[in-house]
Amino acid sequence: MKVALILIALCAGLFTLSLVTGFTPVSAQHSLAALLRDDGTPLTVVMREIRLPRALLAVMIGASLGLAGAAMQGYLRNPLAEPGLIGVSAAAGLGAVLTLQTGVAAAFALALPLGALTSALLAVGLILALAGPRGSSLTLILAGIAVSALASALTSLVLNLSPNPFAAAEIVFWMLGSLADRSFNHVWIALPFMALGWVLLAGLGRGLDALTLGEDAAAALGINLNRLRLALVIGTAASVGAATAVAGAIGFVGLVVPHVLRRFVGARPSALLWASALGGAAMVLAADIAVRLLLPDRDLKLGVLMALVGAPLFLHLIYKTRAEFR
Amino acid sequence: MSLLTLSDLTLMRATRPVLSNINITIKAGEFVGLIGPNGAGKTTLMRAALGLLPSQGASNLARLPAPLRAKACAWLPQQRDIAWPVSVETLVALGRIPHLPRGQRPSTADQAIIDASLGRMGLHPLRTRIATALSGGEQARALIARALAQDTPLLMADEPIAGLDPAGQIDTMKVFADLAANGRAVLASLHDLGLAARHCNRLLLLDHGRLVADGPPHAVLTEHNMRQVFGVTAHFETTPNGPVFQPLDTL
Image 1: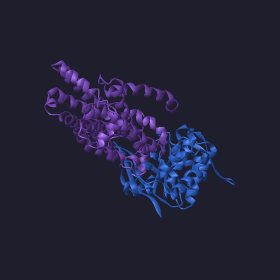
Image 2 (image 1 turned 180 degrees about the horizontal axis):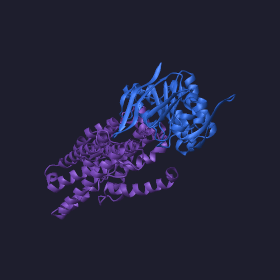
Image 3 (image 1 turned 120 degrees about the horizontal axis):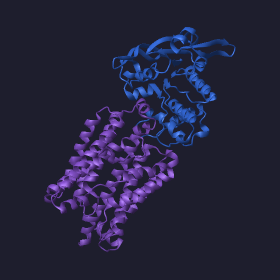
Image 4 (image 1 turned 45 degrees about the horizontal axis):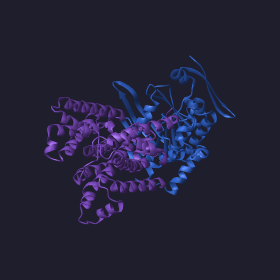
């Protein structure tokens, strides 16, 4: 309970901070007032059309990555699992890269997220076909690795064959992940998929708790493992696919956040689900504030900062908890 | 009342029968030991009975929908999986999952059953400890308590006392015998035939997927069965301290 309150307060604080952080030098009071009440100045437009969707997307994407990470770790019973493991992020990336390469993205603003989402959904279909309706967790991982490798290979091929260096640079920059210059259109594209994913993933708590005892014991506790796996894959694909579609690849959130929060919720997989959703939102909000404060004029990419912060943090955690892994 | 009814249960792997025409009925009040050499099919029998493995023939448990089956029979697998560093109490509380509506916290009645299960396995001093940091034997006791917390008429356990110290083994066998005496039933696969002889009131002897003998310990642990099935000689005696069984030598 205390953990929940702290995380909610943290998210609320960072959300407000994200709203008042930006290129336009205006006081926090002013900008919040302009957000709440249309005062006819450009500041209201900035707040409502630029900063609000950016902060909302940070919350939505962070929650999706954290929730999917916790669910994936719970299902695979492995603290090293992360949502990208089933290949959804790589596939979404491929879809986005194809729209950039073909120029569709330039012709029609929402072509990129839509292309990424379509590609993520195709990948899920392929994974479910490969892993079968009755496969084990191992077949799911193997199918995920195969799909992920295929998507990465095709992305490399697109870069390789890219006729002009500007397109290649654009693709590379997109893949670094960012929340800059997103609009409410991105929010509305991502939200239905994410909401579907959240509902599916949030319903897994009981089954994931039972899986603490192993697949056999969980099945004997009345858990339908096939249904659980299906909900996990579709829920992860919908939420993480949508996150990648609007913001590019943002790593480490789904891996580090559940890992950090596990000890604070007594290691119960069900409690870790909501905690990681809140924690993920806080982490992405914080990182998105940091990219704007650290190098305001250089467009530091969110995915880059996340990896720069996430990797040492993860190393530190491994160092601290290595006794548990033995 | 019969808690487990298997009729002509058969399981083939490729063309090789792993279980052949098993017929078993277990009633309330019985503590049944399932014995047999390695690879005789003990684990397979119990998993097929639960419906965790597809098989031919009929099992009353496998016929039930999974949520109802979880209220009819608790299953303690041989692998002692504890994936996360949860407290012993949290681990034992997992046994209440089939009884809790989705998303609901354990009620005081559930908590009473959890406490009783912890107490039966002598785990009160360990209840707040992290389960993954316990010794193997302590983990085994915590997992047995988890199965007890499921509070089902029938408990199926796969080698529940392997790796426990002598006091832990005897205590666990007494807990199972006590469950049976209170109108429940236990089916446990065992390799310690001495403990099986002393505590079970019925033994099932499995060999190459066939049920070779079924009856009270003295009728199953005969010299003939020991030679034929286990390839050992043994000494069996009814003493003032209860039945004593000791394998002596291989043939």
